[in-house]
Image 1 (cartoon, rainbow, N blue to C red):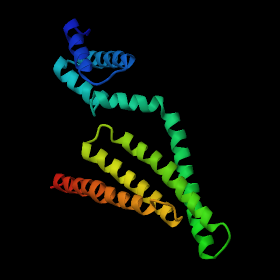
Image 2 (spheres, rainbow, N blue to C red; image 1 turned 180 degrees about the horizontal axis):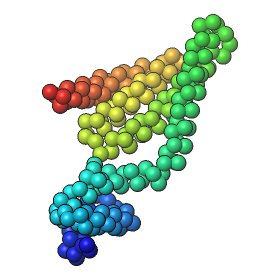
Image 3 (cartoon, one colour; image 1 turned 135 degrees about the vertical axis):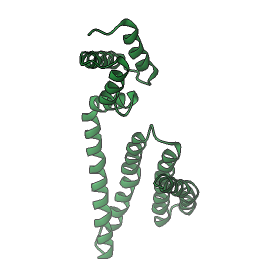
Image 4 (cartoon, rainbow, N blue to C red; image 1 turned 120 degrees about the vertical axis):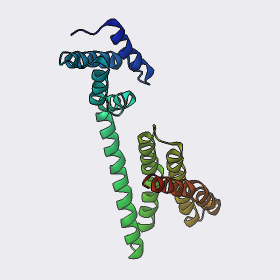
Length: 204
């Protein structure tokens, strides 16, 4: 059974209401919906029930989620490569900090430099990359979750850099540590516990 023009227009209108911006994806979705619904109509179902079934089958999480999945698949190789680089930097920085601490503890030469450079790479490269990755994962999430990520990583980075400057005897190290601690105390922690509270309420 072939769909009528008004039924095709209805499906197209529903797709247009979504936030999908890729025109090729819209066309593919429309074609996919029409084929699925026509198959259901041939089984004796009504258009309304066929559309609902198609919606639950093709995009159970909504039209917008389809675009996210499509973009992810199109950029999956880039994403995987970036994650490999990110975690490699994190591994090397963590190893440098651990070995630097060990060398300092044993009074071996180079321990201080190894520890300092490891911390710098961890704070300046790994944490910002991790923060961006986490933020992208919450683009469609609530504002409090986004702010928790922003304040949490910002506070950790600022505090860490302040500690490095302070231990190196550089100017403003103490001030930067204070700023970082304030960001964590009044920025990150309130949103952290607010999110914990909201989740506990949702489970009741």
